[in-house]
Length: 74
Image (tube, rainbow, N blue to C red):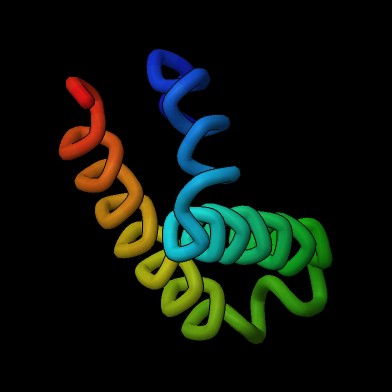
């Protein structure tokens, strides 16, 4: 996610607890979605849950991007 901001992400993960928490939660959701989609039994019966997780993940990504943009030139 955001390879062009790799250095800034590393810096913010160590200096900004809120950013670190958002980033970690995004990665947790990503892993959870992947696991649910890999399970053919769960994937079909949990489409609504998967969609909700994807929306949550997207909101986090937007928030992370905003923080990155706000800190890009600092």
